[in-house]
Image (cartoon, rainbow, N blue to C red; front, side):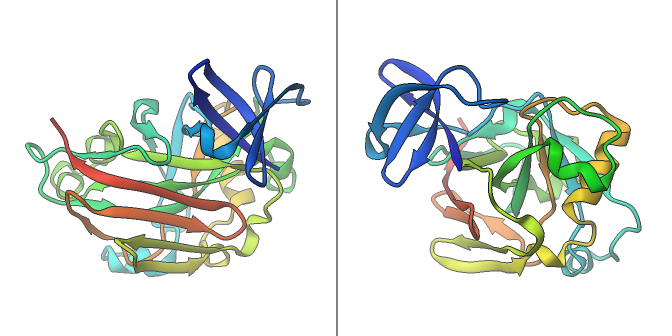
Length: 254
């Protein structure tokens, strides 16, 4: 099932994408879905970020090849950092390049996990019970500020630096999915989620030992090797097999 968040002239709703239509649901997508009976052509709605999380918890250096391209080795334990909810944008929205503050902004295509219910201290063996589904993400990063600051909050936290979408796929098996990133149609990243150093059940267990996860919270699972710079005017697309494709264009920040 593909759960989307969308807007029309009448406001914002959640719905289930079925081929070229969206079947609207009442309220939120957590728990049993209640359909309103409204069905809209997909072409007539604007897809938004599929969820507005209370927090986005991201995992650094979780593909061995990426850890090495950044000058290190894969960490023995997951490396956690956070992106603010204000960084989240949806498919088709623009990534704003903060030229006054950064001269190097990179793409980082990732598989994202969407939490389905409040939980904490979840054992890896039960991680699937608390996951609503999966979506595509781009962990946009001001690379020069990341190096300058020695920690990652500013570099990862700019408004628009967390594109998510196009929807939440509830039936994907995340163990071995192809993931790729293109910039202006050129493939820059190409990997599989089976190459994750710490798999998704392990990440849910690790993160939930630290903090309570709420419905809609997002875990970014890490980016493969091949990260690189974006320029104003670029179009970047993250594709995850069985989930979908997320496309955003880069503009200059006012």
